[in-house]
Image (cartoon, rainbow, N blue to C red; front, side, top):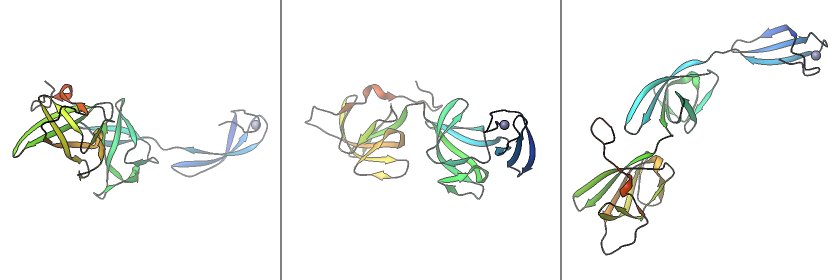
Length: 208
Ligand SMILES: [Zn+2]
């Protein structure tokens, strides 16, 4: 704590009050100036975070300060990797958009340093071909897009995002769970080719 007058760091505490943060009244040992400072004395606490990566999720603990406020969409660091808060579960059991850390029971987050993994289902009038693709998180799927996927061409007719089913508009891959399409014939042009993005996943969730 520096004296705002002479910049000296040598001082004496005259008064101190508060618990989680302390309001201090200080006297500079160099010039005798008195000044106030607020210092936060809380220590970081362990918080439970369930962090997901594709279909699997893991429970971890991270250290945060009790005075911190958390919000959905906020980026937190989990073991050196960046993750985005997707949900906050409070001690009362509900889910909330924003909360002081002290009310949070579990933070739900998802790593953002990965590609987005999205399901693609093409419906041939009852017979459905399903694949998983991995694309950049910022990639946008739009209803009406004509897409090549290996040996088939389809048109996107709906999207399922984390929150809803969509029949028009577009969605970022990071929030898209599944793309639904219908095969089309007689068209050779397509907007993009997802063939190289297909991933094959075995039951243990490893990419083959
Ligand atoms: Zn001073």
